[in-house]
Image (cartoon, rainbow, N blue to C red; front, top):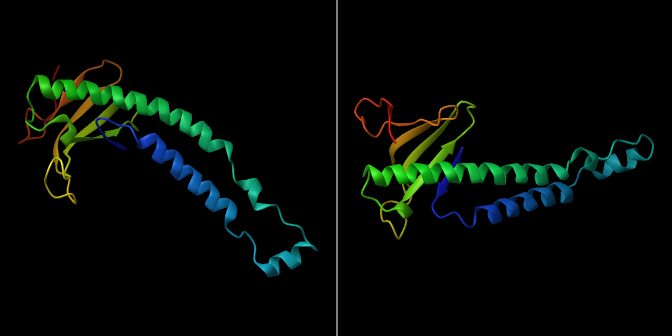
Length: 157
């Protein structure tokens, strides 16, 4: 599940920085005690560095960029529908989108209030306003915003 606010400019930099920290932490942490080093001369153990796959973050970050672009397209579509149907009076910059595309058939998008100095509200909370579902096969967008009392999802364009 990903959380996005429009516009999204610093997320790739933060993601890359996090990967660098994880890789550096794995490389610099001691893998054997000094007693094990003394034993190591008699019975060699496989090097722990061999278990760390450094190419994997690069490959997954490329996939993450494609996923982020797809998420951004879904968020843009939902944002347009929100404005078209006047589902909230909040400005775009005061909305957060939580995208869950782990299900192969649908993409789930929860729209939350963004609370910060610019938008106001308690920054420790982010109330859900409503949700959308995008059917990948048909492209049909549904929402519970039209029936918040029952939470039934209805088609919306």
